[in-house]
Image 1 (tube, each protein chain N blue to C red):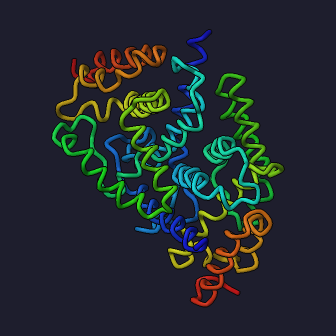
Image 2 (cartoon, chains in turn red, purple; image 1 turned 45 degrees about the horizontal axis):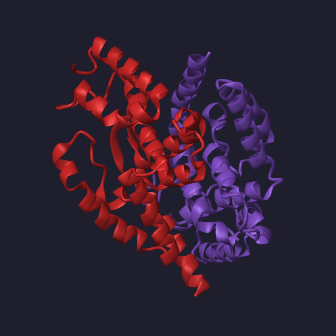
Image 3 (cartoon, rainbow over the protein chains, first blue to last red; image 1 turned 45 degrees about the vertical axis):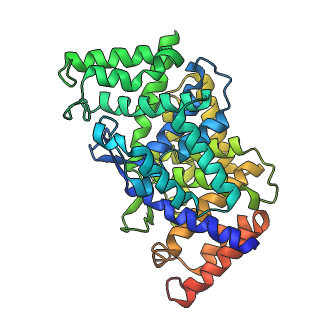
Length: 197
Length: 197
């Protein structure tokens, strides 16, 4: 029984190695190759430690935030990455990801399966401060990469300043100092022609 | 002053994007490309959540563990990855990494620079239970990858079962159930010719 539990956990750990092959639209600063989900999740989890002070309620539970950011993209192992500005892809995103969560989290012992569902769903639905701060990081990190790669994903069809502002809006109310930075970077991007007005 | 603080934090966040280009000796299970430090750090940080129960003192501070595992390889941004079985490279590893830490952590505001030093050094010196559990994960994860890739790094010159056992020894005293798994996998690897006796 106990051995069965460890076996399940190890199989899950093996399976999620696949997240390192799920590529995002963003590219890395140095060589412009696409970033993968594991790298992105690592980056925002570390950012959680450094930027917590900018959240309107800096006394949020950092452990909860870090757990959420580290697991938030796991469902993409089967569902793939959906570009945030892909309106069609986002229509069935939740359904696809729920299927994926069922399959992936179902590999774990029941208590940990529940914990994964609960963390992922909290992050998705953004009803708590921890999830809202996680969302700030999940948006800020690609914005930073874009600002250093001449707006790599901002130049894609259908993207403009209004849509990027909308995507980052959670910072306006919940991390106003980070929001100021967002506005500043988007203005520069428009000026330099990396982002449509 | 406050703006200066955020600017430093953002420059640090940009700089550590480079960790995604620091490649380890291990390869990923699916396509055998080398794993990078950001991916490895993500993987072991998630493993911390799942495997804490196997540590001899399961009431350790998980937040501290996750902070350490997420930052433990940052110094390799400048110092590069040192293969754990490279005896020559390991002779000046600490000196090289301390130089790197000084340069990298020095980009942050002083309080966060101190926190980074403190987390990294705690992990390196392994004097606390949180650091020891982190070390278990840092060894177990490449062992899992090796066990699924026909012992990719175990076949490198100078590696044998004795050295791998020594490398993983922290689990013997501190995570005996994981140690059993280690022994089992190494026996299989020797039987199958992926690891020298």
